[in-house]
Length: 265
Image 1 (tube, rainbow, N blue to C red):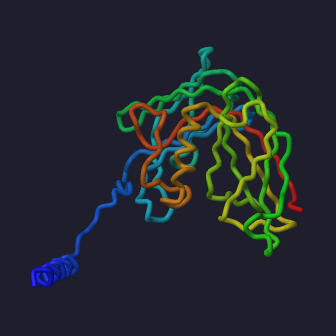
Image 2: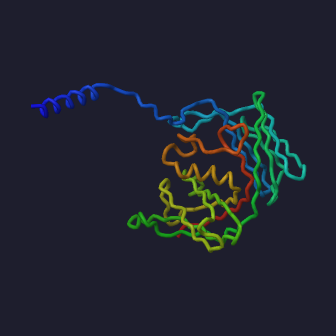
Image 3: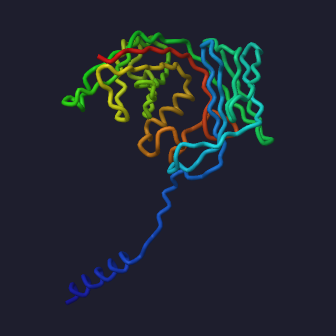
């Protein structure tokens, strides 16, 4: 009899719980209006660009309100100073500021009466030997290809890498960021596995290889680890650690850049 009363009590509690609707706050980073800084300095001769915008909820489409009227400069360790000018709203560029390997770069952004700074060191370039295509392990019956990058990691030197993959001029959403913890001094054949765009024979694949410093690796690697939590290119549920002070969304990266393109076989 006591056991019967026990089961009735449990059932009663379950029914009450089921009748209640509880709103669970998942803390998914839906704050809006925060400043987003995306700063890049590389070793190419093209104009260097820094973009400023405001974030939107990660559940929204990727349309970010630009931040206009900011004052932006980047200096190197030798005292050279590049003053950025605004072109399209929220996009700031400078034409004469080619990055040099080993130099330290400091970005200063002044907007709405507040000053943001960030420091990044441009690493020494690690040559990208080649890229190739292979049969996808997970799509063997569909004639789908994956892209592999080939390079030699220098021994005894900490190195960090970011790769950006384009298929027929469209960037795949997946983030690729790696260090050399397990490949120091080795010849590397790294597969850029992604499930965003199917790659077929005859497609054009382009890989951008960036040699990045440790804080920027931490930023991109954090995004890579949680990229399933939010839409590609959006603000993720847990924002990655930034190298910008005071902390805001985004990053400032001084990196080398190499680009290789193939027709997929």
